[in-house]
Image 1 (tube, rainbow, N blue to C red):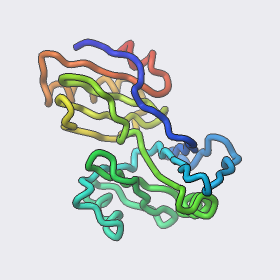
Image 2 (cartoon, rainbow, N blue to C red; image 1 turned 90 degrees about the horizontal axis):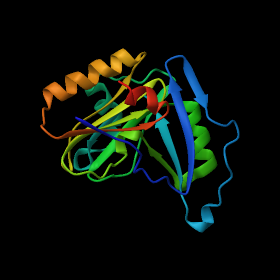
Image 3 (tube, rainbow, N blue to C red; image 1 turned 90 degrees about the vertical axis):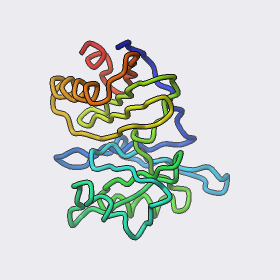
Length: 194
């Protein structure tokens, strides 16, 4: 295995980061930025939550978003609702967000609002590689075989030992002679030292 550093993720024009923790919701920045919808720009909200799945866009129907989550063992609490991304290379991400926050964002940004997740980050590399994005209390894994995604998952991880165990399991399930790992997000040094 060889280690590769850096991130190839290009941020959008405007981005509001929201982190959903097991103990509640934390906004990064209390004041939502102003936005002029007349200029055609979008506001991209990246949700950092383990309550995320991706489904093939050809199979996605908004009315079934909650069912897709349930099929993955994820349920919305009474105060939560599913939100979803636009199509991204043939997949749509479905995430869980508190209803009141979704309503505030919709009221503020309307048609300019787009949701995304680190599960949709695209890393351009040749050969087999694992992309790990550390978002603090949530770690995202995307395993590629060339340009084809073999596996993607968002997992709540309390310790570096859990991350190491998960990486070891992925490498054993999807073996490759030339395998690279790309690490991005917060506290990447601790992940690189594993």
